[in-house]
Amino acid sequence: MSADRDVTRIVRSWLHEDAHEDADRVLDMVLDLVDMTPQRRASWLARRTPTMNNYARLGLVAAAVLAVVIVGIGLFGRSPDVGPTTSPTPSSASASNPLVGTWVAPEVTCAQQVAVIEAAGYTAEQITQARAQLVQDLEGFGASHGPEAFFDPTCENIAYEPRWAPVRDTDQWSLVFDGLPLAATIRSAREIDHDLEPSPHNYRLVDDSTFEYGSHNGKVWEYCLTLRYSIVGDQLTIERIAPSCTGTADASLLDQIAETAILETSSFTRQP
Amino acid sequence: MDLDLVELAQNGDKAAFTSLAAAMADRFLAASHRILRDLSLAEDATQQALLNIWRDLPQLRDPARFEAWSYRLFVRACYAEASRARRSAPNLRLLAADEPIAIDALGTVIDRDQLERGFRRLSIDHRTVVVLHHYLDLPLEAVAEMLGVPLGTVASRLHYAMRDLRSALDADARSTSREVAQ
Image 1 (cartoon, rainbow over the protein chains, first blue to last red):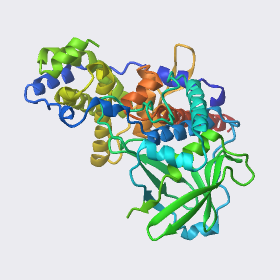
Image 2 (cartoon, helix red, strand yellow; image 1 turned 180 degrees about the vertical axis):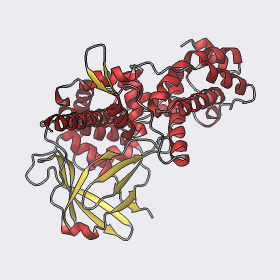
Image 3 (cartoon, rainbow over the protein chains, first blue to last red; image 1 turned 45 degrees about the horizontal axis):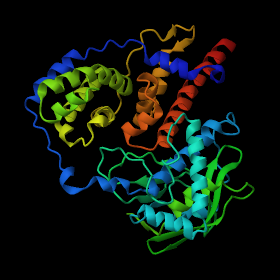
């Protein structure tokens, strides 16, 4: 069985098999076309200054947090061989679930998101503590980001942007509840990074105003929060009411803060 | 990467760009072939990536970031080719696997056909991460920077891709076991 195989070694070996490519012809064509292709002059010089780079964006960091949490569960999870994920018992309330659809929040700055986190009761010290946990997790992946890289409550040192990309000083979250009764997806949307990987989570309706939000490993909810939601017109607001789901331990501080940064940032507007 | 060449090419020096392109073309073609699983598409992606690099090079703010930036344009070109291929041919032609069963240098039995099918089932996002990391040997941090996504996203993509490839091999093993049992 592949559980005993070194899948990575097999895949690497397969990828490194000679595929007989010859780039010379492609290169010749490119060099011919270059003569007919004018270069685009830089426009960013005129519209921004380098100091804007320091404007941190906690929202993107939270996306990293979420992704790391998910991967952490996947890679270092307690039960790697639990088999395919199974769905929790479907809720009859989900048949007409008003949550289903796409919801978009207004753009927010890093400072605004930090304010939301602090308003939820978390201190700068806890945010820093969560950052330390994240850095530790990242090191588990072989990353070498220093402790300055993520979750900086001062919004001065969060560095997660390609230096060549245009800099925005806001983030924008969207939530996609795209399945019945499960399989909600949370997605971070940015003007310059439309290809950000959606971070898949599951949700489970508890009743008409409450849902549980987390990951399910086939046996238990491992990463879970209980949230209250309210839909008025085309506006969705979400509030965390418990740091765990039914029958689970509390989510980690890192998870709680990451979720707060996203879910409680503001109200979401339904998209057509 | 020679920064002088990058700066010269940014200023329209075609000889400098020729040197840069020559250094990139082999890797781009090999990587795109593995991502797209089609040599013709890979050639188109490589050509478009190199042309885009030439065209947009003056907009690169930090020449020291040239390599990561150029890979990002390369990946975008691969995505564009994959999208174009999907539009024009809903079912991509499967490459014939000449030798479905082979023994690698370490003695592992590799079912190329099974791997090929498993790999083709991966999303373009997942294929790209697998190739950049396991073929070009780029660290995940570098892949994240090239793709412009968080490190956790890259790790997630790689994890799920490898899980799916493992499943593909598992399916093959189960199938073989059943055949033996019969």
